[in-house]
Image (tube, rainbow over all chains, first blue to last red; front, side):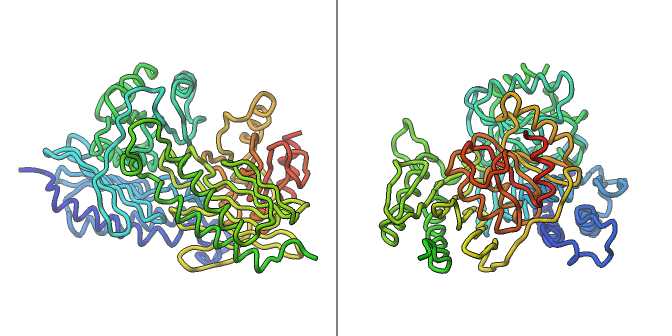
Length: 265
Length: 265
């Protein structure tokens, strides 16, 4: 029996995305005095994060009471179905705080092999990315303003032609920093500050690679089905499909992935 | 006689913004094969830039035939009115190429003292910022989805509380890089990759300062009225109102501006 039924689970994923958008967006750029009657200690990101995760957990619990749930804001829920939802209600909290529309809602559904279905949603720009990689399917869709279309990475094979991104170059430590510097010197262009939106932009064909370190499971679980669904490669720095140490390479082609791996080992 | 009539000129500025949005947006994320029948040498940014500037120049010429025009893509037009329009049809071409919605249309109207009225427009997110600083007025408006409201910078006075931004830390050279490193170490948070959108985010109260170098007149002319109109300070690194060497400080408060100046001298 299949643990994941793409049709049913995609429908639920979209409902979860709708709910998250509804709950999180009112907190974005909202004046603290509108949201909070207390003068002290209010953090709208934490509030938005907590409330959004709570609503997502409730909706998952209603439809799939036996599934496990791993989220950034609450203790893991251990289920019996063999399926796990991994949630980051607001990825890119720094962008959120700064009023920049690159934060995203991340939702992934995993079986025992890893993430299979996922959603990246940007509520302010009303952009949604849905990815599937597994159960005989590999695709990525972009939805905005009621229009949905399948999207693919751009076919770039060499670093000198590639546009890359990483959220913050100063997150690379020690040897990692030197490795990234070499990639930066070899690439056509590097952009910063995007968090999960960078992987989504890769699925749209604008960005060709992402290299990052220090990611938590909720930061990266939703990225793999999007990148792979759009025809890209998503692994850890050793080339393993299942990322366990928070170090991620996403590349628009196998050749570009090999070129990045050569710099990161 | 006043060179600038805020009411009439604001109306024209909005029409110019509408026209630019109409012309530039279809090029964003457009597949090259949709836009171009030739396989060789097509650069959608250059095309979008040139066509947008051409349309803006035509509209200005129609309404204000005696004004000067300075734009990134064509030779300056020298007029006789004492008024100058400064245009950057697509600021943030790197973001544009990468499919990231932080590029902006920039339009400024200057008299002999510098920029007085300006517009920053992001066509994809449909966000528009209008600023005025001069002729007895100082204000900044944010427009989206038919709703317009006045906006102001956040009142942050110390670097340790401030969220700053710069487009690319690697654009600072030599001593500049060390000066920026000291600012980065002292600030609460730094974001990257925003070009003019960072100054607009400052007017919205999410970003507290921007420090940049190497800007051309069309990169920065439209920034001053937005930042000043929203209650911020906008100068060169020596604290002069008229930026002539492409080095810019924008700060949410005079105290924060002094703290930044102390690092940049």
